[in-house]
Figure 1 (tube, one colour):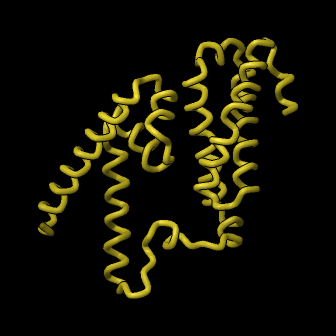
Figure 2 (cartoon, one colour):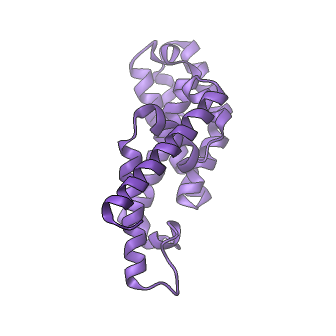
Length: 190
């Protein structure tokens, strides 16, 4: 953590060290769920902390302005992106011992090519619908279902109550169900 010397404010440096000590394990767990390799997950966390640390050190006072919940949210996003980048790069893909189909539940020994194509299309439609949701619904849904954060962790990261996180996730799911139903009716698949 040589980049810590870039922090000019000792309070901000201490706060960043606190963030590392307090949240490193949780962030490593999040990365591990994506990369499925402990050493790669550790690399993702270290790289994300270094990048975020350099950005925050370059702008004195920004970390204090962010506060812990927002900084943690920023770190979760950075670690997730690092892990996705690692999984997505072709060099890693050749070493990986799992396939895209296995990771997304699209592989089925007894499934026909048509069934697999329909599953992939459904998955893509769902991704597009989630991305089309309003930010207030999309963020908690992604944090809950994709990052697998608890309502408590999401509430802390977004500085809202756990109950409100639950409400937003429920409403977001209902919106998605309605949109999927409308899409199916439009396609004549109901």
